[in-house]
Image (tube, rainbow, N blue to C red; front, side):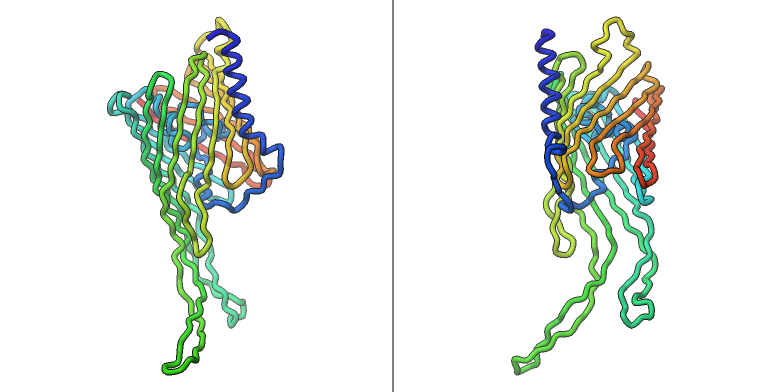
Length: 350
């Protein structure tokens, strides 16, 4: 591939990615309350958060299951494990685990497993009671939670092309609610009837299956990689009478090591630039950009930007250290009027 062809490849890739995100700035796009299970869209991995979540074309071991499962196919070792914690806004705690094994040394693909757990904390329950001086009764404290268990597979079909899939069993427990119902009773032998009000307890628990798919393609020009993913695909479920689906998102991504263009530079340096464009079911399109400078595979400095559908956050920052197969990543995301979100991830691989 000559210089002009290479330049055209990069230019077309960037234009394609940016075109997906263009509607976000070109029109008013109000897509609200069209999906549930919003915790599936919250990122806990510290490296990904520091890069503005621009991960679709990057390879990241078992944690790729949360972004693009095809990124797991390039795992070099036999085992990879990550554990992440994320203190989200409103004191909601997100914890994720992922593991990948390479039992066939890449010949038949990589197997991955994921766990995502959300603790919403404790709440004080009340119930309307017009006869009470307060107008309500206390029902004590209750807790809410969510859980996702996943099984993934990725395969490098050729030196350049990889595919991956990830299926998750998702459970969200929003506790019980008391609902008033009308019961119609008929008088025997007559056409007369009367209605009485009664109450029933409704369990607000759902357990659908959610699917993720993805591909990655190495162009052959230096380290340039294209990625595509479809995440959170599900059937329709409902609480009470309102149906909804998981927060479906389509993403195109491109990444390259900028140091490839600097001749004579030591391979101990790398500066990856990653760009993602995402089309969401429930909010406007997003453009995400991440930069990661790594020195001697030991120290990484990261920064990211994500065009947002709110006024509270756009930029994120992070740092990572790695040695002897053990890595620690930290990410800091300012959140405006809320407390800053801090994420930490530990990785072990061999």
